[in-house]
Length: 315
Image 1 (tube, one colour):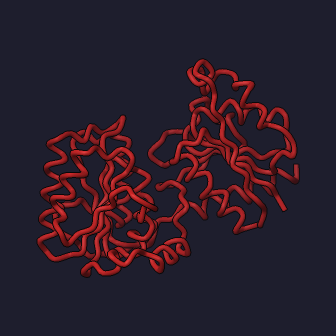
Image 2 (spheres, one colour):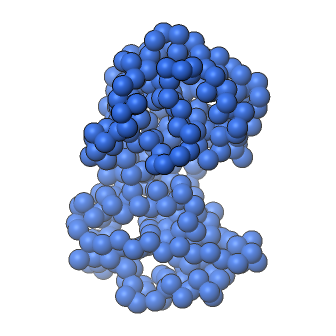
Image 3 (cartoon, one colour):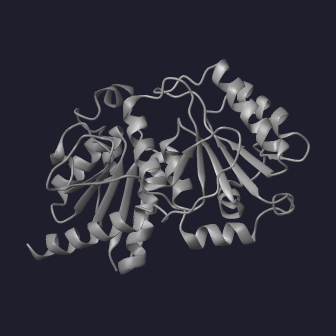
């Protein structure tokens, strides 16, 4: 039974991607998963990904070593490097661009809108995640009653916010809220969830736009994000979140993307790819009905890792 480690600094996005791939690997070949979380002290963190690993974190890099180690995030690069030195028979995987080049791991996955390519590099349009069809079905079955009671068609609204790439300013918030208000007037059942980056101004604008018939998660209890995706007949996503767009496109349901000002070229290339696939249209305040083949890269990435891992063992 192979042991799989995930190696991150605990950031939710990195953990989500690593666990999604690890769980898909277990589905293929069995095994167990252990999550290793590094927390480098400030000077070591500042030097990542090129600098040395924090010796305090190296207490994690001890036997029994994993058969496969899956890392993500720049703070995980030095510990992964140490692990490979201590355990050459561990097959190392890095998710996203490691910045230190193709030698960072035995296998690297990057999104297609990033530029890294090479013999040990795989790229896909969307990112790995944990939202399998079974996960969505279970979330739909156990969804809270107020979501199930919403009028049809149900529309999941996934709200992001300002990021290092997208400002998402007050003008953008006003435009987005107006579009949501127009959609609410059609009688669709709207259910919205903010993210960690959603500013209070956007949350309040959404609350006002949804009106008394819609649902806005208030941050209490478990986030009904998966239940919303499972119940939705259509999805609205803000363009600042590549991960949420990718997860929405994995459902096979019509995805509508709101485009704030200043979307950078890299993110625009990603969105253009989704549009070309037929998974996404630009949000205008009304729903469009269309079908497409769901985009789920997680099992594809896991299958590629498993094939390369088996060849690695034969060397």
